[in-house]
Image 1 (cartoon, rainbow, N blue to C red):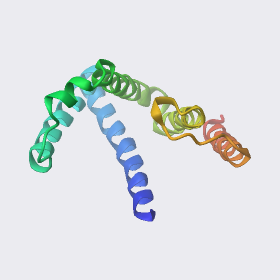
Image 2: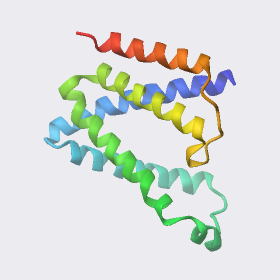
Image 3: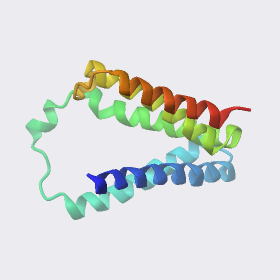
Length: 147
C-alpha cells in the first residue's frame, strides 16, 4: 500500500507539473484552448503507443456496444474542461492557489460521492474523523490562499 500511496503522490506532482508546462505553452501560443488541444493530442499519440505495446486483447464488439454512450464522452469532456480551466487560471491566480482550491473541490466531491456511492463508488459513510480531516484540509487551503 505504501508504494501505491507513493505513486498517488507522484501523480499529483505530474499533474501540477504538466499544468504549469502546458500553461506556459498556452501563453506562448496565446491560447489556453490550443494548449489543451495539444496536450490531448500528444496524450493520444503516447497512449496509442502504450496500448500497442501493452494491451494484448481488445474488448469484444459486444463489450464495446454494452458501454453506455455517456461513458465514451463525459470523462473526456470533464478532463478537457478541467485542463482548459487550469491552463487559463494558472497565469491569473498562480499554481499554488489553483492546485489547493482544486484539491478542496476534489475533497468535497469525494466525500459526498463516497457517502452516497455515486458513480458506483464504494460507499464510505461520512464520520467524525472524515469531517475533521476535510475541515482541516479546507482550513489549510484557506490559510494557503489567505491574503
